[in-house]
Image 1 (tube, one colour):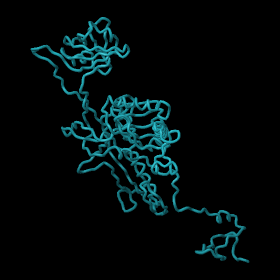
Image 2 (image 1 turned 45 degrees about the vertical axis):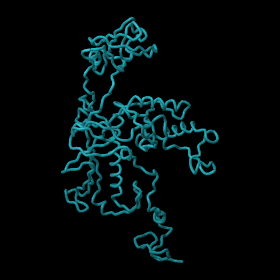
Image 3 (image 1 turned 30 degrees about the horizontal axis):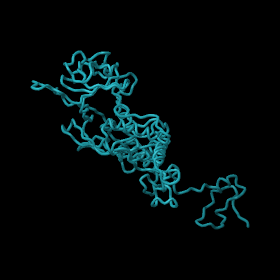
Length: 471
């Protein structure tokens, strides 16, 4: 077969709509650019989801809520303890006097001693000597000390110690015809606050790129699918910003100080996030090895601490992969069903059908726990990159607190987001377009900018019921 025409000039070649031989679509072997022209890349229309679901949000949607607010700061009050107790007292040898130690928190011994009055009956304990004495407060406190009369003893030798004596009030005793008794005490409470931060981001595209339309079929993180062109990147920018809305509430740090060179001194005081709130006001448990031989004992240590706090019955466990598997192993060790304790938990416990080695919920003591993996702790581009936090135990349900703005007790989820909103502007999640492309003519710039903005803060109420699991 012979063909006419230039063997090197390709400008005359015309692609054919079908795979047919013709001199107008012939590529010559003598053409220096033959390989470039012949081996054009085969382009797949569908984008490959190499990382699966990439978003890490959803944690706050599972355990909290979002509520509007109109101020620069959210303030709430939490109840104090109902009973009176002290854990840093001093008792001398042969003494009937208890001295209340000053603390770094500002509560002097005098202030603490004034919470006790003559007639109160107390339990005195020293764990170092395993001694326990019960006594009646005999005299009014003075200079941070009280004098007691022990029941069945002449002094407090059984509980002698410095800074490690514990005391709590269990009642009172007065003589017949006593004129007065008791001690009027104001209800104790603690006020907490947080402030919202403004988060912003944008996506920009030049006018020339808008004219170059390219389609690609995608599957969104929400499970829907379809074709996108240049706004494919805008779609991902929005998803990333929505993740940042949650990540900022989890990782946020509050810095209202004036330390030179700090963000607070520069006018960016931040906001207190979940991890920061638990570190400062909650419970932190380190060195977990739930899958080990003492895994259940470690978990029971957490339960013992929860008993000292609010003892919320239902709790959620949000864990990284290793800790989640460790709890699975811990629970499996308690199950004696089948060979070596293996639990056949699917298809009516039939060993021939399937083996379920995972647990989504369990009960221990008086507590119910619902366990789930937290993608944020596993993803290699978020906390999974560092791997220092193993999980969070969060109480389910709501708490009753005094709202300073409303002036009354209100029920709120233990964990919830407050965002700025008013009749004029809702800043929960704003989005707007500027530029001169796509029908918007707000500037002379040959581009289109899609802006994102939110202003929000996280409220962690009753943080003493949260547990942060750390390595």
